[in-house]
Length: 354
Image (cartoon, rainbow, N blue to C red; front, side, top):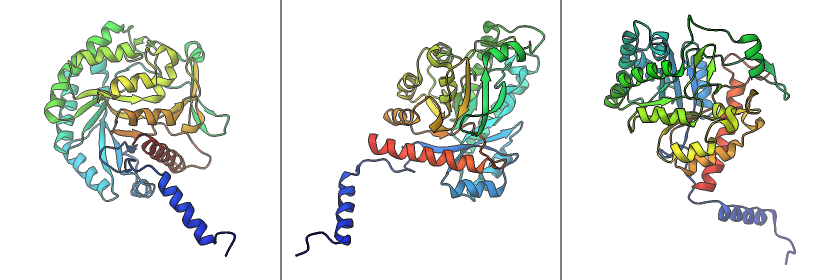
């Protein structure tokens, strides 16, 4: 009698042990009720080779950045192009809502609002479920690009440097919070009923970085109370919710009213998070730089797990992808790194949560 098991028997035993230990209720990666990993796709520059690359690394969804215009024919043509690579549009982004005429309350805003209303109707006709919006007309996103301690390049924001060297009054006068709230209310009152009729969800992105005033223009969505006030203006509409940017919320640290997990438990549990920008940063304000998911101060696994605990099933994108040495303009290496990491986080969260 053999004193030791054969190699085949040993491997068979290990396989049986692994099978018995594996969870049986883990959500399948592409199940409709799972988080849908996606990326932001800039249609003006994306090539067919880029689309094939996204297919090769396992993506099925994108957030389509249309730019300044997107009529119905262009949306349909884009869907058909993406479909050849197994990709669908989950969120549509068209820049009409960013018009200064809308956000500063200038003459001509009704025409710009009408363009965005038409975009929402066209998204609905094409069964694209989400449109992203934001509202920060005087914003400065970054003070410089740096080489991080780990050697890749990323955006940095330094509040002291911004105030001392970069900040200047952007427009002919200062716009107070009351001014911007009035302009935002005018906009949302006009577009939300159209979104509801089209069955398209409006996903509001918080202000990045979360500072109450920049360049002489107030910013509204820089903490929990601002987001709650926006929700109140939506009057309980199921078509109003969030583009929840984990990076922006992490930049604010303990000044946000609720932390990342508190926001997920609140808005996520009420099905008011429609999509997630999964981004990490080195530290909260006053100075931070963007990082890869595994290189910042937030625990990205804990974030993904929290999302699954509230049964979030919208899209999750890597957001701003840092630059690796030798990477191309599409950042294929960065995409491969971040998407693979996100798929691993999600797989583990589903194994633990179900």
